[in-house]
Length: 203
Length: 269
Image (cartoon, rainbow over all chains, first blue to last red; front, side, top):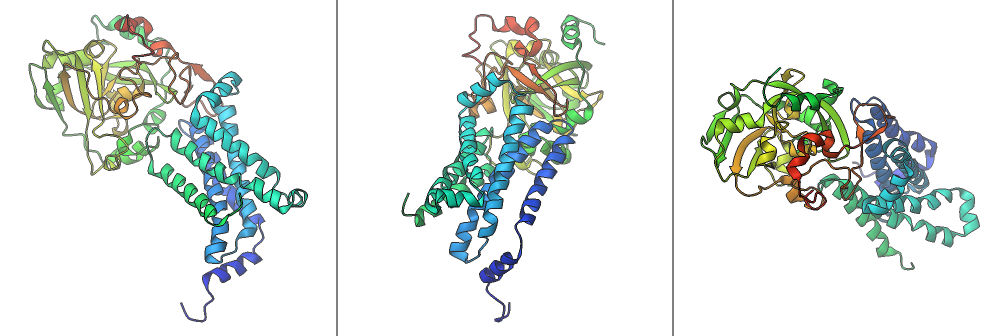
């Protein structure tokens, strides 16, 4: 790289400024289309493919949304304008994940659904993460910040920290064995959340 | 096709079962030696060499030794058994196995007095099994049956599916099939059969004793700690297939319930 080349951070940031956010939504939905296609065309068990595919994407996008702020802070790469899209994509996939479980896996057997959420810790935990993310999605529009005040809005959105850890724990717990992939997600979630503790003073 | 004392058992077991397709049966497998996803074994098991194949028979037997597969089972005629297959993960299939009753193999090797259980072991082939290089389970995969369960006419050794040699991902060249137990008991690609006095090591039971019992009988009344076992998803019915109620002993209650008389199945699950 020549000396005249701009540093990566500012270069990426200035490039990001020119890119609108709608392609992020569009691109973010592409892996979901692949999951849906795999599920619909599955030879044996499409429900399992949809359930795990959407669940994994929800966790991946949530983790991606949590990378944005540290990137700005430590690498001077400003991708803040895409953070909302990443978070909303996560909630979209989480809603699909939950809908597949309700409709296709447990098939609206409400008694079973209720008892499963209460009796199975990994489901209780996953459901709690889902509930935590819903108010964040509901207050993701511009006007919400103005109405709630920046401080109140920011405080509410700290729910993303317990939510991502619970989501990763849910992922680890539903496996029959300790899978390195699930553990990497949990480690990433713990790392990204602990970074916040280093710089957030007021809780 | 095979006459004998076991024919009525087999006939009743096969009643009104519609087998799944070859594609479904051979592309949806739990065989963690070849990866933990359901489609991993079909993709990764193809390099396993199953001919020649040696099975060691030891313990309390009259004729111990390391047998070639042909020596051990070459003279035992096979028959078709269409069985329900219920995974502990609450999904199920119907599979048309080709095989023979395990008791015929045991008769051949001569079970000695004092033997109370049969222990089985799966091959460990690190060059072709990427899974055994990770400590997700205590390899080799091992399972066991009480001797009376092993001798039961419904318990078979399978060497084929749909009249074709059993594919690697389904446990070539020889696997156990115990249709009234959760699928993980039906150990694949067997390289060792030991007749023993004590309850042997069983991989999943050892891994999570509160989740996987030694008996692992299909039982809709005993939940897995992380999910209900009262119903199951039948594989291959499409995204909107109805859940089906799980049957006691996977529908083989008439044939096998007597094996467990006097046992508390919620404790010895």
